[in-house]
Length: 292
Image 1 (cartoon, rainbow, N blue to C red):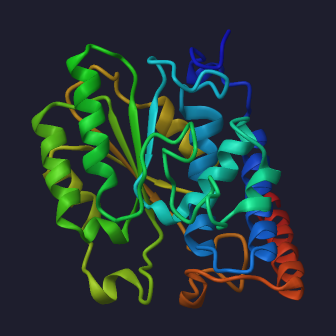
Image 2: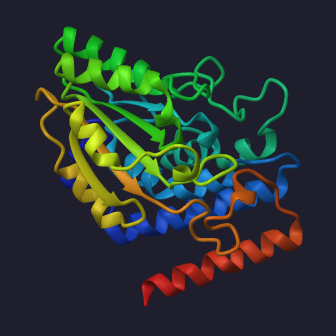
Image 3: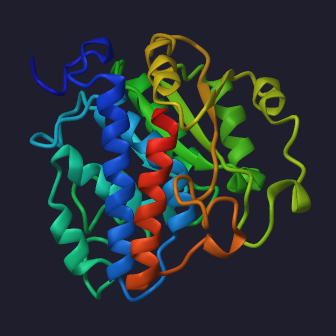
């Protein structure tokens, strides 16, 4: 059976294997952050690592060897500053090499920029980075698929901070109005903005109720619990249903590295050799603690 037509319940990966892949993704993120001289948006990358793993290794019907297949699922990274996490997840899935990311990230003319560019990197569906734009783009893709009677889904990953943008809610209203059951939004609800905690600047709560008020099917999970992520993907309504779904993932910014977790200073940063060793040791300790 091809990777493209693989059904979620027939994934070659167990939950434990997906957890191991998420750990590997975080390790690779830290190594890149430790070798790149500029800043990496490491906090939001770490908070979304489990989501990326669940999508690229379980939820998305895509084939790295056939990236133009019209039957593929589409993925839009609305929180474009988490591009490094997406690049590494894609590399681990087989789209390209991790070494290529490390060697050229952030350099002039590199395919691996701080924000994703579909022109530079085949396999990326949308160029994103201006917050609040990803969901409107995903709505357009879902409407196009619905108009062509194509059964694939469109997935979009947003940060909770960017949902303070009016364009997000215009898109949310349009999605329900056009009965886009083929649209699935994941929200990385890490409750931090760039320089403050979310509720200090923008009152988001009651957050699930806001999505429900726009007519969406709302699912709230622990975004670091791989079993819950898998269950949420398995339980998605049929793509020809008439209500879009939002999966609100409660997460921790900097997840897995104790000195980064919920620390505003690590929205973005770089690691020296000593800090890299410290971060990797913290990640390993976190893994051992969670496995007990």
